[in-house]
Image 1 (cartoon, rainbow, N blue to C red):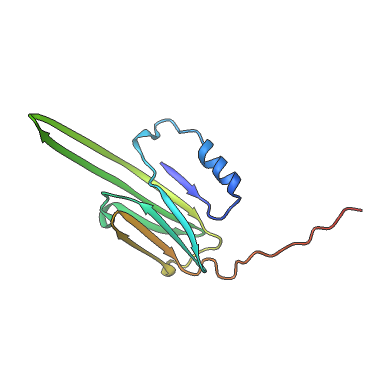
Image 2: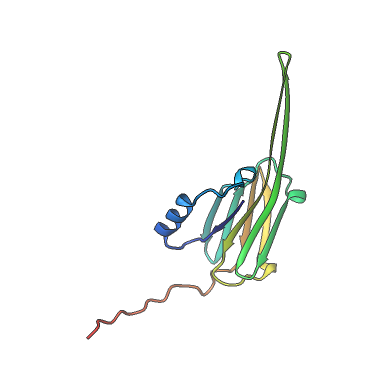
Length: 141
């Protein structure tokens, strides 16, 4: 499953697109981890909920021009034996989350850490010099 996230865009359009998007056929086997995007000064901080994932083996963080791409695969198998019954639960699937950046990011400015099931990716300085510029609207004659 692949999802593109656009931080700080037109919020109404963003939510309409995100929530009203149809589920693609065959996408049931994948999953999309929850993501939280925040601007902290000139930095973009993206947090992804990935409990039960081995970040060293199963997660890849890449910068592709103006895109931050986080992809990976979840392998989670649980066996339980209780009262003479055996329960086996298998959850697996691949994912890909893409975050649109305002400018192309320098790969050396990207850092990632994993703690308590949360992957935190910081893109330093990606918002430097990107303050909005107001354009004056002129009335037609």
